[in-house]
Length: 233
Image 1 (tube, rainbow, N blue to C red):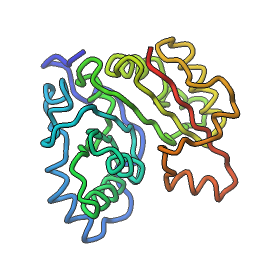
Image 2: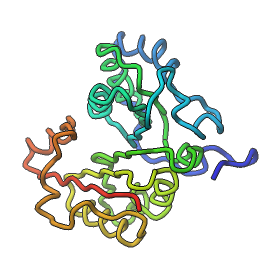
Image 3: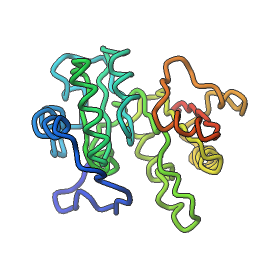
């Protein structure tokens, strides 16, 4: 559902970092010069058909929610040039890292929401997203903060509306409690079905799912990751 003119764009409170250490000179240059060319316009109508965001025609559009340092998004864009990739990330240091990868690889099939992407989900047209990724989101481990977790009824409703029938929703985490939470929330929602019910399958990352730097860090620190795949029904 689109927002009404009187509805504030960022009605949901954002929790998390927006900036870290000062950006290096090259990253400042990219944020100033490249980001404006790739930023999804702040326009309620521009996402009705997200394929229109890309100058080169794309056959489908994928969405990554919280792309971190952008290595996964850049990999998918390079491996799937026929796909338009939209990534959302409010952490400017992560945005700058993605911009650096896009410039080095000369990738033109990526568009960026450099802010909390949740309000923009409400602007995306029905059944226009063919794949969605949520990789290693903030687990908000304290019980009183569980309501901040992205996987919840409201966001699953949003994804179900914008995703095409049969589209895949991928979730990864190295926190067992978040994996259990996600499985329960998705099951209660009823709009997605797991690709596999076998927990052993969840421990194996598919070949078209590259490792992120956060996942590599978790591995070095002895934590095991799980890779969940759901299909929109």
